[in-house]
Length: 279
Image (cartoon, rainbow, N blue to C red; front, side, top):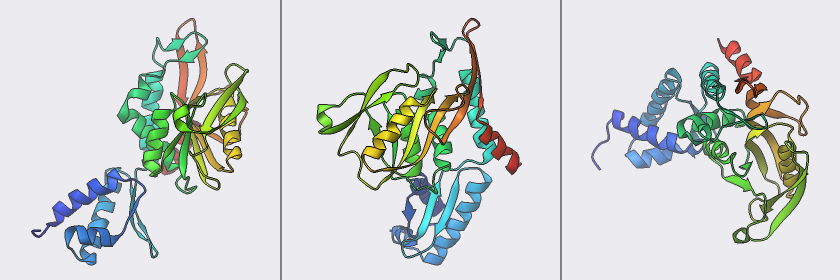
């Protein structure tokens, strides 16, 4: 291989790191890749760290220890995160999105990869310290946000089904109280999906009373899995007390006017507070 120039190394390293969020790459990996000295690679990483910070591309961490190296995390600055969530709030607040029963039409937003990826990155940034082993979600609308969150965390996504599937093998089934209907429903999870002692981050698209979230927490208890957090794209302001504690949301649905066909949706208060602290 011909000598690799610094600008070429920086381009390749950026691609490799951003394609594998939260994965630790040792300096030896890049030394072997580029046939370069560790001192040169350390300088390259310092340059990338500064560029990532200046252009709000995320955070480049140096991890110490025997298994240490460099790790990329797509963490947005507080103001950028607030602006991204506010854009989604404006889209969801547009007239014509109210469905019968006061529900908000969100399917088109959840099908926009660039929008959902940002939401997943924002959610993931709140749970890196908890080090979840997987992201858990309920089929089907929560899957896009959960998938992007799992990508940012560098972990698998696990889907709880509304009924067991023969192709997933033996499953655990539990009953839970639906938050939106107040009736008993069933959820199912394959016994092979998770392992005892793991840590789960629950991510979903919408929460009203929290019945589904409570059900997923109960499901994890059946597997002896610890839930390190619950986060949803949007939750309702009413009821303020959910059936599950510790829920964090990106958006708050304050009110719905079915006659006018409009809704009042705003970024969650913690996003606004974070932006103020950093300003």
